[in-house]
Image 1 (cartoon, rainbow, N blue to C red):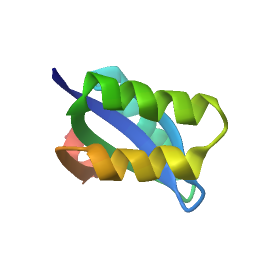
Image 2 (image 1 turned 135 degrees about the horizontal axis):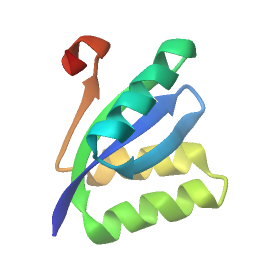
Image 3 (image 1 turned 90 degrees about the horizontal axis):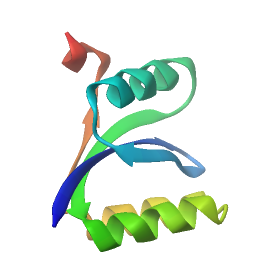
Length: 84
């Protein structure tokens, strides 16, 4: 089943990855403002999302981001103005 997720990506890879929710989006956008990262949104199958999470938990942020980019059905950046 496809679900939407939000994440925080930086030059080092994926920093965070959680199911999409109003609160999670607000928190990640705020974190993105403070650093060199961007908040992103993605739609992907459950099993691929699980793989992204496992790679992130294993300390492989670059591999997690690469897998997210390779398997997402839709992906895009969330801008602070999108929350207004």
